Amino acid sequence: MDPARPDFRAPTPDPQYIWRPRQKFQDRIGRHLALLLLTIGTTTLVGMNHYAGFQSDFGTRDIPIPFADLLPRGFWYSGTILAILGCHELGHYFACRYYDVDASLPYFLPLPPPFPLTGTLGAFIRIREPIPSKRMLFDIGIAGPIAGFLVAVPALFFGLSLSRVGPVPPDMNGLSLGEPLLFKLAAWLLFGSQPENYSLNLHPIAFAAWFGLLATALNLFPIGQLDGGHISYSVFGRKSSYITLAMVAVAIGLTLLSYSWLVWTVLMVAMLFTFGWHHPRTFDEHVPLDHSRKVLAAVALIIFVLCFTPAPIQPLQLIR
Image (cartoon, rainbow, N blue to C red; front, side):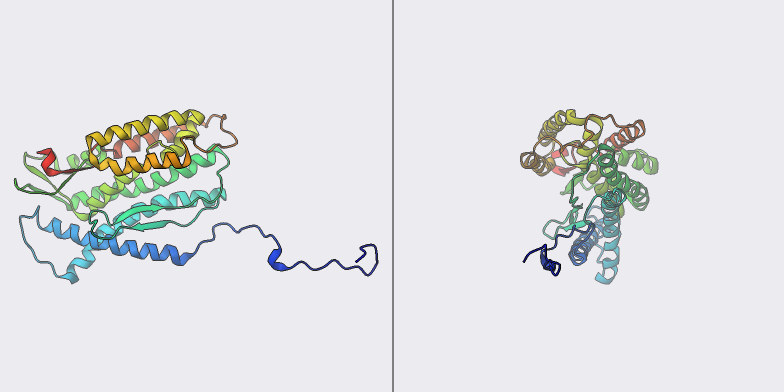
């Protein structure tokens, strides 16, 4: 065809070959819902076990609990931990929506038996495009830990108010939970000092809050592309890479103190080998962060210290 001819008509393009920009915040809702329902199931089973253990007073009482009564008690743990984890991830998600940074809805990770302690490996969102500026990166990174922390604190005090102090049998086997500073403070305010050979018998809500505090501390580790890594890079720029290496060394040292750090440390090292020890750059890497966000970074550091415990889980035999 000759385009100079007056009767020339350009061919109509095939619609399947027309490029269209990808719509943001599009998710397969069924996938997220299925994972959420599975996680509700696994955490409820764990919650039932925690409630039965709570009622047994460290195994000193054998109280049969009908399944119909035990099942709703399982939701006390399940609802609390999913609220903490869900609000954490939704904090990230809504910050992404605010800045129009494409991200997925939360993915909840179920952890079925025979791993009975938590019932979940946590939750995460996928950020599907680069975050261009340090201000945006900081706000998205810090929104999750703060949102989760604001749910975990009242859950901790409420759960501890339902807990009780009791004698620990001398022949008891099991696990001892490390107490973060905030946990110790809340327990002291509610119960005072505990006599020797006595311990807190945690209500399932209190245990869920403990796990929420631990998850918050883990996410605030200033390493790589964890929430703490985003905050560290936003504040220190390229120098944050040295903080990452230093914290990996700290994590390796923690494994010598408690084997409960081993899996987490291996995952962090694997993450560094996969993605590198430098945080992805923003266009304004050398521009200092504003004062108000530096204050929020200090708040995040305080939250990290309050939620951290050097030995999260220890066999009772090792601490006697």
